[in-house]
Length: 450
View (cartoon, helix red, strand yellow):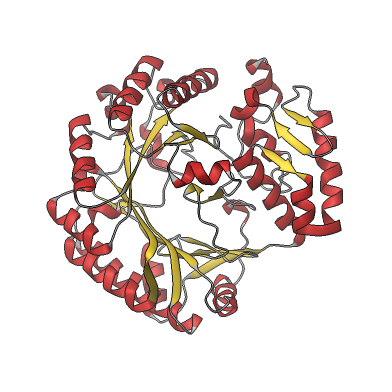
């Protein structure tokens, strides 16, 4: 398989497919209206998932692609927490009951920068407005530079069961190039403290494709990550999109590894992780064999959402906070992005949905195809027909035709379905893009495919 020819033949940049349609193709519809009806339509007793977005950081990492803002004052954060609580109340009131939560995830920004009092405020509000049980998975993203004894007490009050710890790279030159100073010792001690505080599972995020990152530097980082023996590792490719995130212009493009270097760095790091006893999950995740993510992957119960690969099978994911995205099975809704506008809307008693999309049948079939390719590296025609009946037949024909037209033979096709070849799994996003009806519409620019 000639990697250079593949990169030369195919689109160099494609979506990460954490949703379909992808967020740039959401329409400026009445998001709040879609959200209201969707909340009313949730069946009694149906478990849902909740994503809470905290769009603040006390340092601005230049590599970051999230909706966040840098602040040195805590007052805006405290005010924002009040707006989050108000939004929780409005969502519960609109739904007409306390919805049972299967999964609760705090992302950012840096939710770990919250003070202990605000962890208490959020915990109380969540339990007042949602049904949280001992079975609810509660995960929080932690920046080790934020974590104090008060943070650990706050996490205990919240009932955190899973911590996601950002590392990116431990090399000092790479850290300077992305404005992310963070020592191995600091990270090690924070993970030990989280585990000591009762957090049962730890995930570490590392990045390849960073400025000044060489194979040797990445190897040293991955080796240090492995000594911490996290339950999960996410090995993401840095997405350089300065046309979307202006602070990324602080990164010198001349310092970035080329496409082939990115490819080889990612493959080398992935082999390192797998050789140390981790199962490969999808295109960029790894988990210890007894972790529920690995169990889900082996049993065909792996899913993909805006947090990446997940065991979350809930039909409904409610996003709270500025820019947060909700999924209601047949529709997506994104909240108001600008923090102040979001706060004004929710403090006026309104739902925060700004724009969204209602999925037609073609969207739903293609979303299923893309998710299964991203999760299973395969598409089962029988599974497609079980889900969509006779409507699946044209898509099966399309899949066969697309596979036959591919000069690089990235997939194998038979009467059962199509399967991405093991040696081609690094190009899974490219294969998924074959089925993306929106890819060539509009002026959207994406990050590199690998």
